[in-house]
Image (cartoon, rainbow, N blue to C red; front, side, top):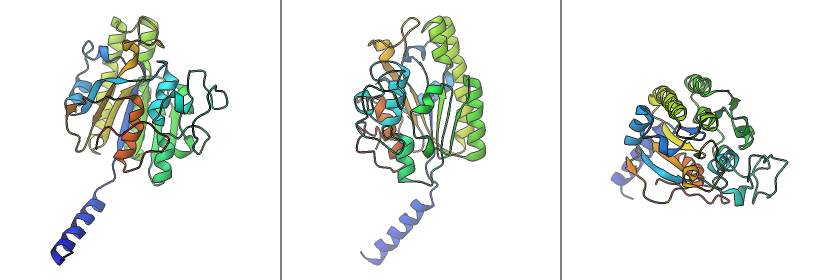
Length: 284
């Protein structure tokens, strides 16, 4: 390597190391149907889509209930691998053993994988649904907190972000799912609940904007009537929206599954996917 090339290499290396580490926030909207995006007043979400790599045709896993799908999002694999097959699943109560296990005896998940690879990362989860908290390695998280109701959950997430500046934050919002069960998916009340979530999204986007963080929006399932859990498109299709530094705005044409989310998060932090994961990073 000649002197000029060596100096160029040193400059590039110093520039890369001078860049701040990536920050990433995932906002998981429980029971959020892709069909409601065009029906509800959602200017903040639509503005994010305009600058994101996205698809409104991503697929969850069967059955279309919360535990198997949030598990798949966090664990980079499907129920056949992680063993979370229903909402009755507990760490000590299951029908299918996980294919492999991490630090806490459950299937390897994004919190544990990030912590093992980069222990200095500040990882946090703030969630509404209590069941969400059993699906990831809590020992890997610097902060894990349940906060009831989407408005309060959002405010807690904003406060934590501004005070602690975590590297990775997962926010789970549940009010849309409640509206679906109470009034019906795509009912007027459900559409209004989606519009209220959009206002909360706007507040979250504003809070993290100055940190130039990556943003991922994802859901666990949609619904039909006042229920979900069936093998229908309305319940299976979910949004995947990814925006942030260097992300080229475009509609993703390839197949996207919810278990691709964890590998995509890992890749954003320069971390290799766990060998037991079947998902793939969605962006280079």
